[in-house]
Length: 109
Image (cartoon, rainbow, N blue to C red; front, side):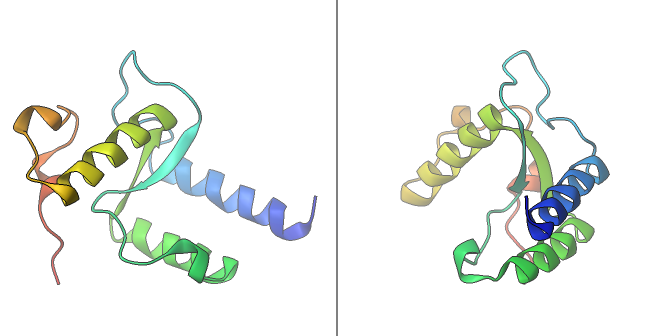
């Protein structure tokens, strides 16, 4: 394993612990590993950033409160809901109870 792979795994694990270390939805449906989720989505493409810039960006977003920890199941569910929201008006029942009003508010520019 290269030094960068070890570094990447270490900072990601530290960031997940810093953000609470458990799925924000935390219910019986939690499945899979923990993932970092952008509460309001992101306006950039990860593959266009170097690994170093990706680490810097994630750290800054965590400090600004723009990231949360979700299990793989809940992150996929949220991503499906967000995709639906972009394509059409979301139905109120499509929003899970664990998503707060704060996380649904539009980004401040």
